[in-house]
Structure formats: structure tokens, C-alpha cells
Image (cartoon, rainbow, N blue to C red; front, side, top):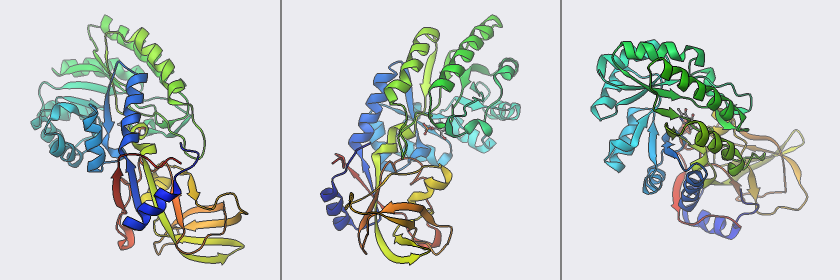
Length: 376
Ligand SMILES: Cc1ncc(COP(=O)(O)O)c(C=O)c1O
């Protein structure tokens, strides 16, 4: 994360396009993809579209030879309209409507992820010869968003699932997992990879040859608090993949690590008052808009204002909607700001635009993709 940002640039673009303005840095996306590829060279990456489905983001990702993970027909259509190629698209959502499975199958998708026998039956109905990944749960007390509370089966049941898939005439191809989004430690990855490698051996003895493993996402980025560097995070993962999964095709579907730090929001102070010994600043974005990640993604975005370093006051930052729930920061120390001053939120690239709404009639912010970045 940059220690400082180029405020001249920020002021210039805010003046040119007005606020709220969502900037996306193409060069940061490219750099993030290259870093992941360097750190995990034997992994095939599929960008999780849900993290940020803006078409310009999809284009940059596609230019960098990365596939896409989609969870809905609309996400599929969006990616397909730009790529015109379904071979680079995977569908990892373990719960789909029968019509959706039919749609994907017609588009040439053959690999489906499941975490229930009902889902296996649904796939069998519409796609006779499908390849199947079974999603397993992962214990992780160090992740911010625990996906295993909703998805996955215990690993202990996976052999029974593989046998069932085979019995129905489908192809059990491997397992899939997600350690939880924004995992603050690589240990859960290591634990699950060790258990999964033993499982692949057990399955082989049962006559089930598993060729694929989808290791999901979960790679962390810093917000207000630091996280392990991606290098430190990926090193033990690479070691175990190199040692224990030499004959297995490894797929991963990161979202946050590709776009998280590549998004920045510029908003503006549109109202000021004093209440309960705090200064209240109202800005032209909200928790219903780009700050929705504060609610759904439990993210705490670092904020910057131009006049750092001077005396600071207890302040509140409130959103622009006519709802009292819409508070962006309940308690934050800020220098005195005036009407029209800019507030910049960093690390806004993932799970912000995608979960924002137009509640109260406020449109989503303008989006500008830029070539360089805003580092000071
Ligand atoms: C199935 C699946 N794959 C990938 C991702 C992306 O995860 P992350 O942004 O943590 O890399 C998610 C996030 O929710 C997911 O549900």
C-alpha cells in the first residue's frame, strides 16, 4: 500500500471528472497478476469476477492471460461478450438452478463444483458426462470472511461423494476449497493441502484418480492493518504444491489479490456539523455505494486527506443517503476539513463496486481506468 499519494493528481482528476470518482489502475492489476504468477508458477489462475465485474477490469485481466471464475449467467455473459471464448471460464458456485447448469453446459462448460448430493443429481440430469469437483470445508479462524460456514462438506465425506459421482456415471475430477476471504495466515492453506494430498492417495487406492485441485482465493491485502506479504504467504503454499501435487492440475481463483489495491475512491465533503463533541463530515458516497464493502466484506479502508500532520479532531464521516445507518467512520481523528475538501479511500478495488447499490436514488460513482497509479 502506498505510504503517500499524489494529491496534485487526485485534485486534478477530481476537478476533471467530479466526485465521487472510482479510479482503477490497470498497471496495478497487471502487477498483481504477475506477482501471483511468479509466486505460484504452476497454478492456473481464474479471476473471481465477483470481486469487481467492471468491463474495463475484465479487459485488463483478460489481456494478461488469466481465466475467469463466474457465479451467475450474467457474469458469464459479461465475460463471454468480451472474450468470445468459454474455455477460459470456470463456474465454481456449488449451488445452481437446474436451468443455470443447462445454460452453462450449452456454453461448453463441463466442469462443475458441488457440495451436496442434490447438486450432483441436478448436474447429472442436464449434463450426462460432466466432470465434478467436490467442495470441502476449511477451518480458518484467521480469515475475515468465512466461506466454509455456508459451503463445503467435511473432507471425511469426500470419498463417499466421489464414489457416488462415479456411480452416477459422472467423472470425479478432484476437490475444491476456499480458505476464506482475506486469510490473515497461510497456515489454514497448509493444513488443508496436507490433508487433501493424503486424500488424493486414499482415493487412488479406491480406483478414483483425482487430477485437479481448485485452491480458491483468500490471498490477503493490507487495509488499515498489515497482513503477511504475498511472498511470505505464498512460499509455503508453493513448497507443498511442488512436493505433494506434482501430477495434479492446480487452479486458483483469486479476486481481492488481483483488484483490491487497484481501486481508489475520491469523495468530497458536502456537509459539516458538530454533534456530541464530534465534527461530522457528510461526503458524496455512502455505505450503500462504494463503501458497501464495510458491511458485506468487513473491510476497513485506509482514508487520506490532503492536510495530514496538523492537529486532529474527533470526527465522524457519514454517507450521503438519508439513512442514519449510513455512517462510514463512527470515530476517526481528522484535521479540520472544509466544504469541498477531498477524502480519498484506498484499497477499494474489491467487493465495493460489485456490492454497491443505487439506494435513495444515488447513482454509482463514475469509474475511470488509468494506466499508471496514484502513488506519491
Ligand atoms: C468460490 C469463490 N472463489 C473465489 C473467490 C475470491 O476470493 P478472494 O477474493 O478472497 O480471493 C470467492 C470469494 O468469495 C469465492 O466465493
